[in-house]
Image 1: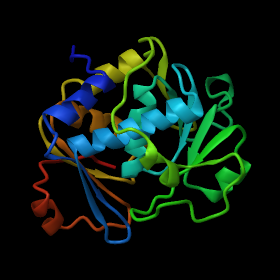
Image 2 (image 1 turned 30 degrees about the horizontal axis):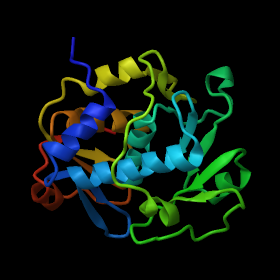
Image 3 (image 1 turned 180 degrees about the vertical axis):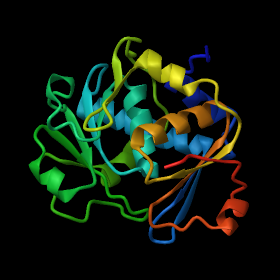
Length: 245
């Protein structure tokens, strides 16, 4: 049985063993390449975790709808949600009955979802250089890009979710639910690798592969669907493995 590796343990690995080496590289649709070292990635997760707790009242069991496409900010939000004990809702959960329930917090990059969402909503601008949400922002909405940098880049752990708490629930055709214990199992046993992850892959697969890679001290190279995967890119990033779509 693979070892269980929790998200806090993975984050500790990022800020110690991988403090100055690449942990996450993003190739975006606008010819952008963003490289985050382990320490920088952990800082983003810590800032987002502090925003979740201080401004959005996150605590173990809170339901967080992650309405974002695979993106480096999506991985940051998933790690922060799990660090603070949230249940991440992904995929189409609108007709998923009691398993989905009403989200306590909705995190989205969609203006349509932003305008229609009930309860607490966070607008996430996907562009690398966007410092605030460019569209219309509902009165009670939180502008992630404008707010997150003001939060501390270290996170003091509070109450943690129990192993039986739901960590991830994917609705629609994916039909996947993982407890925190199962999430820790999914993160264990990965090889040391530089993993190319096409953003078109299913989000649960992207998240699981990223956790396994970071737990082993490796690098995740995430490429937007518009990015052509060339031999030059593979050689430049020293890719050793690829997640199939």
